[in-house]
Image (cartoon, rainbow, N blue to C red):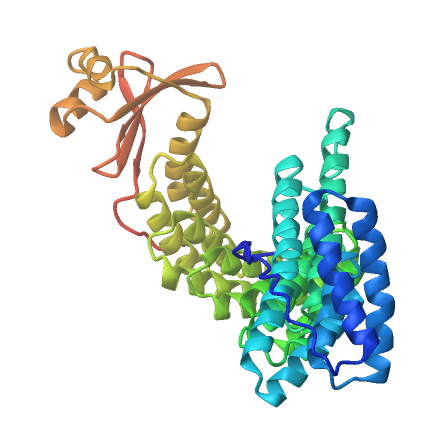
Length: 480
């Protein structure tokens, strides 16, 4: 899924120690003193005393919170002590209570201290989570792909990094539950591991939890991406029934989303390939409908129109297929593949004159493509115009079975004086291509004049007689 990986700037804890008020509750005063002393021992490297003092600080400050909840500064220290003990959940709770109280009271100085202390612990966890996601992606970029034996160690390292990232980002979220960026990146970690349901749950809950964050709107977009990726994962896993159901649900919520409709079309198309008869045609038609809607939503993506037309053709819905081919050609009028496909559809519909016109355009746009000559010849044959069919099929056979001469002009000049080939050279100039080939043991040579849109096939390399002239410079009616 698309996501930002912006690493928050580290915020140093201010570690500002307030003086102990003389009238303060003894548990509050004692707890604050333990925090102060514990931090000093931590700086000295005295980890044993530091740990003992922070645990005593928590005990004292919990009693303080019960006896004197109005001591908002002490509540901030309780959050601080929990954060030092890596108890992110309680730390976040008490930091927030202190922040809310000091904000309401208007004590800006003490509020700034608590905010900065919380920000320091949050940034540390957040930055570690982002870094580990990046390390996980570097270790194994395609996490959901099954690794080979040689790659398993890389995926194991990626898993280790992702797990650590999730742990760090969960701590960051507990410390600052209303942070939309934390929620988004936590969901990203789950999604990159293919754990889409967990990613979705994080984002759905996050929209409520981070309602006060100005960036909360980004969670809705992230949720759409996660759900689309989940559907794509089902499609990749060939779980077509589940993918279709999920894409249909997404399409109901966003009926104009071209990407979702494209995914739905792909799932239906793939499922259709595994069915028979009426069920197969029904799925292909539904696939065509989904692709057609996707194409309408993204009209410059002509691949969607191609897919819609192919699905409709497979469903036997030729009129619908024709409409999609024409829609593609409206976007890309000079697309020979689209013209070829439309011509084939029109021929199947017995619209021979239109098919000829369309296929003749394809031939003229790409005269090097032998398939278009074969198609055009086949349409003429179906329409009963055997003469034109022979013309086009002769070009196809020459290109298909023949060997192209390296120097067409030199080959043409070698034609025997007075032969049909020599006369053609005099009248037309040198050909663009020359093919030598055989048919039923008969040696033939075909000269192709690409720019003049004609070809001439002669009997024998000497070009003594003309066997066939082919002309695609103008469109001739399909029937005689």
